[in-house]
Length: 156
Image (tube, rainbow, N blue to C red; front, side):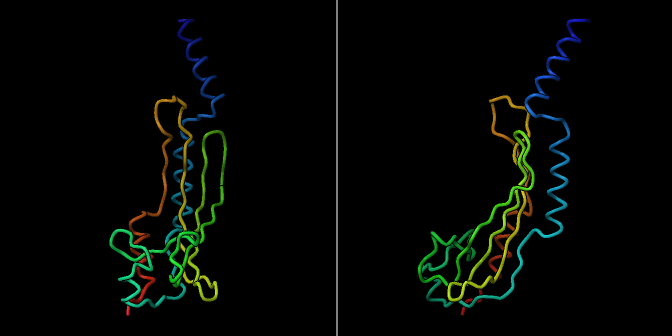
């Protein structure tokens, strides 16, 4: 009995030192869901007109068969828009990190923001075993964000 008590105490101490707290992931997953509900997803401020010729020339990238936006460094020089990503760490403790990713779509001609995509994610917080990658949770859904971002474009 005493050996069992010492084993439980040892495991609890190791878990506490490693930064693992049961329920912490669930708490932060709920926080991520709440933040997503407040401002997650795609917001289009102004739609962008692109010619069919530019689409055929692949001036804009395709993602899942839909027009998309490349980051500034990788965007085609003739693309009417490019993306700028901003990452903000909402919470960091031990192996757990919660981040907000804001992807701003900028019009090349005047650098005006024409759309934004906001997502949140929780990474890590797992019991460190060294056997597997850390778990994660994010929202909104990547596919729905891509579909909504594709609505930014008017092909003429």
